[in-house]
Image 1: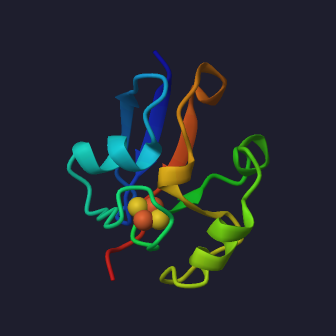
Image 2: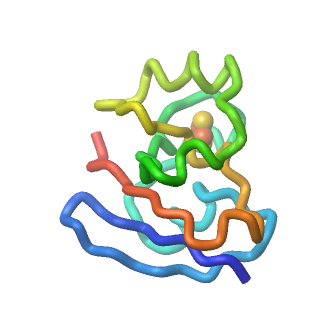
Length: 104
Ligand code: FES
């Protein structure tokens, strides 16, 4: 079972076991973080925005045009911003590190 490392804005770090096929948004939200995921992964909001660790960012599937458009609405985006509903956990992503931004 792959692990997801989640860091919050205060720097607290948790390691979560994640079922393959679950989106990072689902896992983070279900783990009690303040990540809304308002559109449930339909790419119609930016409330699932996270910052991906710089070393991991290039290992993810590339960002679609629709995701790029929606990231324009994210609060304080960075060069490694992603919409977490578009990141689906797999064994290849074992150890993925993300930071959950402060809720707007
Ligand atoms: Fe709306 Fe990810 S939950 S775009």
